[in-house]
Length: 493
Image (tube, rainbow, N blue to C red; front, side):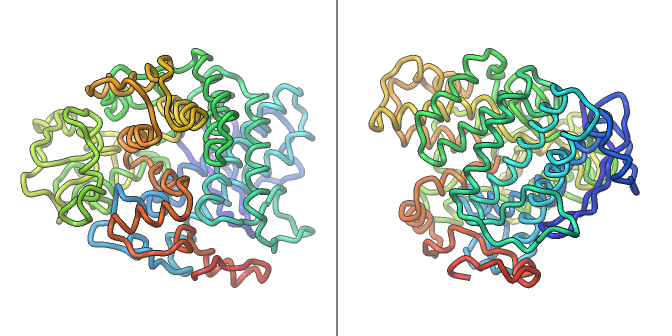
């Protein structure tokens, strides 16, 4: 099931213009309408489904998934913006457009989710439908806040829709309070959402997986372990046989390994397509069959960054994840524009880079347009649940685990990647497996942050970056500070 027509809501923390989609037969295939009267809307199950659709479509946006990598991928040691950037160099300012877009994209989702949470109890719907609709909205609100709290630290907690009678100039809430809301939202979603997968919609498994991730981030290892194991034992998910299955058209979307992903439709309305190919595909190679393909984000490489710290340095011989993550000299991709004989990456690199990103690069086709492909965006995969579980076990075992059942789960990832199985697990092994498994999927920066301030700064300095601990958080956008006198800036900006 694909998202096709989009209802666009231009909402920030302070202003929300909600354009809702009309009802139709399929949840994610409806036409947008505007100028809806709130007095007559939010009454029926179809109304609430349309309001929920508006929230889901927020994660498709350029500000959310399309260019979120500028904030949650670029600072990591795996990637850099081609020809450099202020974010790469940890010199970004509060006036940077990338910072504002990340902030507003996520608060837009929060605003739309709050509308659903507020209106559903008064709609003429059954209690079961009400609980499910609210559960999905709380799931979406939680994943938005999970991004915000890790990128900005203290952020305003907005839990009601904007209205003229409400004070919208809220101060920043402490990190602990933000995490409390995230955990409460995800626990609610896990309680009321179905386990069965319905492409594009949150499930109890998705809520539990994200909640396990949250607990892991907070070093609440027993809770992380138990939630991840619950998902593993559910039998709903399993690994795809080949890692490449996750990144080719025929098998990439909504497969049995997918826990939650952004639904994209390709050549529909602006914003319904996945924009990442446009930014990741190498410059001037004709891969997209259009005028995009800019190679904006590229892998780190020892020719540009400190050796033994880069995306190129971490691989074992024969690991197939490298081929599907990075385009490098000698790599041939028969699935990229097969009508042209596939694609051979040049021996001398492309677009000023010695290597390029392969993930989300699928080539041209009838479902590919300017800055749009139909490939869905991976947010949570079953492989991550396995590694959350394994990391929690290692942490609870004083940093080393010989538990064969846990080792076997991780070896399932390694076997399909074509590398030798392990005999034990420790923190370094888990970190490397996460880095290899999720390269360029907006996971590595958050994994670096989980190390703690001192260790994260040391790692990034070894990588060749100049920064102190204040630069591990991004600045609050300057325009938000101008609007809201109750906001304060992060130290160092």
